[in-house]
Image (tube, rainbow, N blue to C red; front, side, top):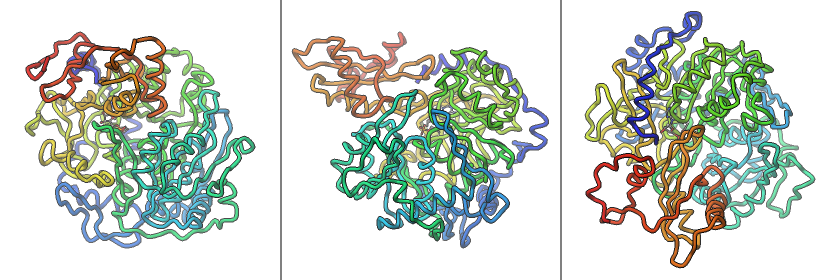
Length: 631
Ligand code: PRX
């Protein structure tokens, strides 16, 4: 986390407030935030009831919310299936041949799926899942690069009430193995390769290594992008195309209780073990549907481009579920923003006439480095609304993004988490913007800032909390309810987000980073404990401590302090071998950029590593209270 006072100084320097463009407000779903918010909060259950009625259910709820603190059930007793609202609902309307997904591969290859075609693929895949004997409640791990099959597989699972666990394809074998084992998945769907900046990345060997120690895996389905290069080895391996080939394009959808688990998505916390965040069909459907609609003012004629990977929660909520629930046309592109050149995303915006562009601060800062001439080469006039997510956006990057896209397209700086499922704090197209602030709570959401003792901070810094339940909230941490309880017990009575936040005199929230041992590298959440445990597995290492350090492009970078075993000498080769070890254990995103060999680590008398002290020293700051330091 960048130091609080440092960020605040920069943020509060930017006094400029950007009013919403009047013509946008005129046609927006929500034209007056204050009024709409007040009304939603006066009776949140009534508000959510009204939203839920915009979607189709097989049978109604008897109660909107059953709140047995901190356990929530939404739309109690109702039956639904999120896929019915993502696909079937549109097939019964003029949208049946509307484009659902435009996919562009790293090499420029294009695939277009209408709602009808996407539904046919999903049905074939669902029927194929049935041939493997999979049933409601079973878990399937999806370890795919960003290709349409990823979306198809997710929806096919959901159609049958099978719980999907998507694992980002950049994770290494041990990280994948840990997630498969925890979920006890019966099937894994993968691909032979992914592509990254022109390089071919073999995925199948990673899966082979990961499942060698996963006895629950019965079948491995492989999407073969380079068919000839990857022969299938054993009878348990199935080719995706063959698997789907003879399947019917019709598949009855399974009506589910609203609280039926939809997916598990693993995310990092403060221990070495990733947490399996569980989301359910009903409430998640309502939350992602309405936030996509209101935050981006999504209309049928829009072309919606979200740069996330479905391997992360943004991809789940705002590439797949939220936009499909709204019947949107979604553009999704494989690859990096600067490959084959820094005009990549701008050219796609021009080519497809993108009107909504949802990206990340790290990507914006990366594109900034290449200069304004890149966006200037393209016609970006189709853009209407912009979005940012995953980490605080510094005002400089905000203003650059605003300027190069035409100085009239509002930026929705959306704050949320894997656990929250949906956007909770955000501007709306009708609200004035302050660069660097995520604005105020979404309708029906009571977000606030509290001190450690649970007192509300009127203006100033503290911990970001959510005071009341919301429909898309996680229901539990898979097989670890105690970890779920911690979110609601840290400050009793409220959900503690783990973020430090400043509230200004207008009630705008300025999220400043994590209060815990979680680092955000390029918006990716990495637990320092996970990196530390990977490092201490290395034969040369006795102890390790990991901190986040400000980084110009990625927001934060990982720095590791390592104590070596006696007799082991420091050398560039050793440092490289430590980095390689983290790469092979966790994946590229978790590799420390800096490793410093030290003779000991600062610890409390009870033996806990004081990362705070290491960080203060690293950043040349006052270490604060060191009375618990042992030596
Ligand atoms: O620290 C906050 C930061 O990302 C965390 C959640 O990470 P994850 O579960 O990976 O989800 C990322 C995508 C929703 C939060 O605790 N974060 C997310 N959005 C913002 C943000 N920080 C500041 N501003 C944001 N808009």
